[in-house]
Amino acid sequence: MLDQRARTAGSTTAAGLIVKIAVLAVVAALAVWAALPLIAAEAWWGLALEAVIVAIVFYTYLQSRTIPLKYLVPGTFLLIAFQILPVIMTVGTSFSNYGDGHRASKEGAIESIVAAGVQQTDGGTTYLLAVGESASGELTLLLTDQADGSTWAGTEEGLTEIEGATLDATGRITAAPDYTVWTLADLNERQAELAELAVPTGEDTGIKVQGLSAFEGRSTRSYDEACDCITDSATGTVWYADDETGTFLTEDGDAALVGWRVNIGLDNYLDVVTDPDIRGPFLGIFAWNIMFAAGSVLFTFVIGLGTAMALNKPSMRGTKIYRTLMILPYAMPSFAMLLVWAQMFNRDFGLINDLFNLDVNWFGGTWSARAMVLIANTWLGWPYMFLICLGALQALPSDSLEAAKIDGATGVTAFRKITLPLLLISLTPLLISSFAFNFNNFNAIELLSAGNPFMAGDAAGGTDLLITYAFRQAFGTTSADYGFASAVSVFIFLIVATISAVMFRTTRNQEDVY
Image (cartoon, rainbow, N blue to C red):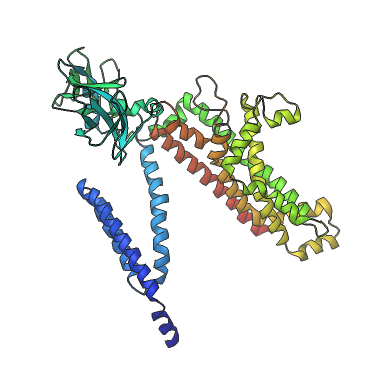
């Protein structure tokens, strides 16, 4: 006991102590770096949480006790940061109307609507326009004063002069310190974000974007707190605030350009169930999602088990070479192979049509596209099944197989009654995990078919899974709806969790039987 204590006490070497001090110094530096913006934003709860985390880290690593904590603390913090918090934030977002037109607070929406009514006045400053983001990711108008050539950054806080900007031949900003300038493609894709940006320059003046230029003018719109409404003096239009939907509406129900983020309860979830325009595509995607995940598992398992049984025979020669060749698809990067398969299924010059003398428009028909993604996904997935089936076959108890042979069970009978049930006991958890993976196999769909084919007016593609449908709702359409996409994500989680729970219960029943 004394020797063990001595070894424990003297186990900290000088090099280990230096490494520990260096790591804790980095932690302290990062804590100070993270604390400064929290203090500036007066985010005291965030600052308190950071202080607690730093205190736990220093308490854990500055003493020789609590050895298990030294291993548990990093994993626990990473689990909270990258698993639990995203889940909580996703669930929280699913109860809101967060998305294009509903990103800002009510005050920000009022500023944007008022700024949208800015009209150019005589003598107002005109600017050449570029758009970009600051180092912190804040959307910014990058402006060049056409009168004196000065350069400015316009944000929700107002105008700030820029030093050291690079201009093109026309005088427009192409680069600026601490800013990333958007390309024209970025500008076209993110017009909705730009439309919500209001840049005030005075109490009732602001910057108005007009094509690739901008001007400073005075707004014809004003907000009246007494009626909680915005009035446009030029047109006589009045928008009244609707706090339930986070929108300013006229008496006729016409919405203003920008709203604000509010809690809408279960509306996003109810839309999936009650709205026929959403329910129909959702149920169709769900049915195909089940077929895709189950088909991928079934095909890969059947092919993988068949090849494993063929190469598990002791009399088989050249098994090492065969095994090496068979795991090649598994060793290749899947994202690259999916792009290769997409070209192989090309109707005009793809290898599949040329090799089998076909003229199939694989991407044009719903079922041909679905067959295509199943074929490619099976090719990518069966080597994994081959490896685990081969290992499971080699781990089967030889006495059970010998007893079956003595009882006269050979061939298909022995496989069906002895080999397969024993394999399923050990492989079912892996098959369940494979099902869950393929249920959310975003890469296979997005890189191979991108959800195609899409029928006119449909928001869902013929090969879309729920995960690609949610992604398209959030990022892939002209109008992003993060709240609805988050609700779909929660549905996905509940579906996969329920199916997995049922399958694991079935597995336990199998173990009880065998």
